[in-house]
Image (cartoon, rainbow, N blue to C red; front, side):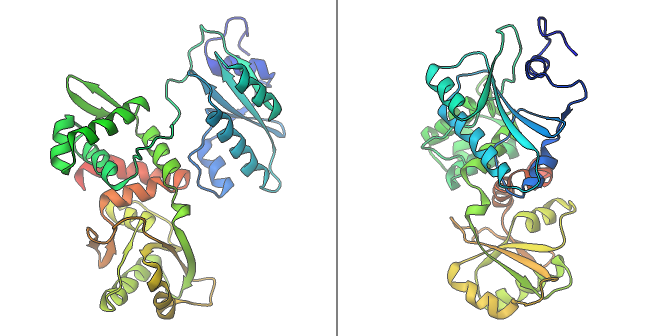
Amino acid sequence: MQNSENPENAEDFIRNQLGLLPDAKNVDLVSLYDSLDVDLPIRPDFVFKDGGQLFFVEVKSTRVTLDTIARMTLLREIWQKKLNQPTVHLVLATKTLNSREELLAGDLDIRVIKLPWSISTPTGKEYKSTNLRISSQKSWSIVTRLLKEKSTSIRQLALKEGVSYAWTHKIIKILQEQNVVKKEGGYVTIVDVKNLLNGVAWERPMKNLEIEKIFVNFSGSHFAAQEISRTLTEQKIKFAFTSYTSGGLYTSYAVRQDAVYLYLEKETIGQFKENFDSQKENTIRAVIYSPDRDVFSDAQKKESIVITSPAQTLLDLAGLGYSAMDLTKVMVDMYARL
């Protein structure tokens, strides 16, 4: 084990301070969040498993806020509601901490580890709340245009998306503060996609838009989406498949085959149930979302399935959090070609 008097990095120092055994595992976050069965944009910097205990470690290179402590506590509360899971200990590792936050951390049973100033810490910033939402329709158009262009000026972003220069500048400034983009020589480039996606998931979780889950009597998800598209189109009902369904079609990435995901207006759900509701629980499940914006006007059709636009699909996948992270990253990588 690394000597605690001369640690090389934050992880070694924290391990020493916690007195972890040399074989204490660093847990994979994707599998951890899958086990939670809930979509969260909250992620520790390290998760250590030592015997029957888990340590969720948040490392802060900047000022610790009440929001930091609240998010850590929320994650623990959600974890403790799961049965037969190891005991969780929260750890906050930081170089500086105000007395108010330190007292609160103690009251909430969060262990504080003071890091030496000589130790390097993660540079990414925590996603902060703001009056301007990156996930709003106008803001997201700027983000997706930047994903498509790779590197461009604020002026060109504003012109191509038909929004004001002032608005575009504000959005880029927020993204700079979150270390999502960098600006060099008048050009803006996305440098941290993961932080961008985490921020979107925090602002607009898809769970908040989900209004219904029903079983539909089809033998496969692709065929189900085709037949539902045909029927709803004939009945002139507004709809569009999204998230896993549309993301899989755009990317050809293998996705789960036991469900379809679509937007419907609330007043048409009754008609949808009359058309497709099944009492057989071993059939395909339809997850229905209520739109918070116009998702129908720019819908496209692929393989006889009506799906949300690439921009809307990416936004919705990001809103699913860690459960859809692999597909979301593939979508980001391909976005300029869509």
